[in-house]
Image 1: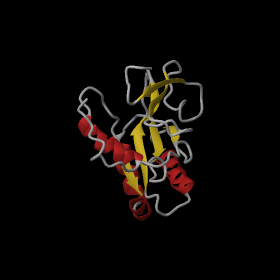
Image 2: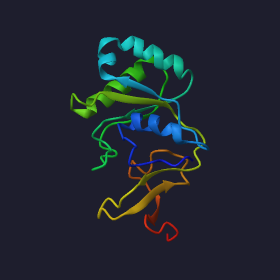
Image 3: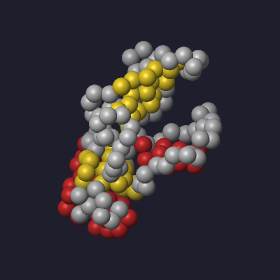
Image 4: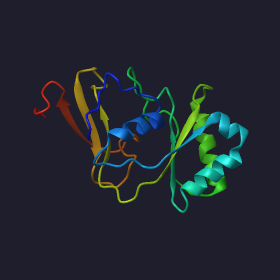
Length: 173
């Protein structure tokens, strides 16, 4: 992986940050994604549904929150807003899922929803944080699940494993 210069890296919503990170990946892959903007959703829902259904033909979908209030330099609100997994790739369930995620924001400034294909055969999934959430201490905190095959156990509060690495001494676990 190319070195990520964090002083110049600009975080955005979940969808925006994933798109920005993609240029740094050399060995890994990110899922394809489609960002649904609220103004486009409200003006031409059918065109948005057509675009998504054409792009992700015949695969279950993850309709995920991508809200500016979720994750930023100052706080994390992981799991606060709705995300729906295994959404059938058909108009009615997809329209319901996108609408439900937008409704969960309760704020007009939350202008997007992230749609991705569901990932199959998951070996490991997790979340990496750059500080301990309780104390703010300078640790990389890696919460992961390498046993259930699911992608939502960590953010959904399920059983997971944790590795803590001090940022000043990364060789000391």
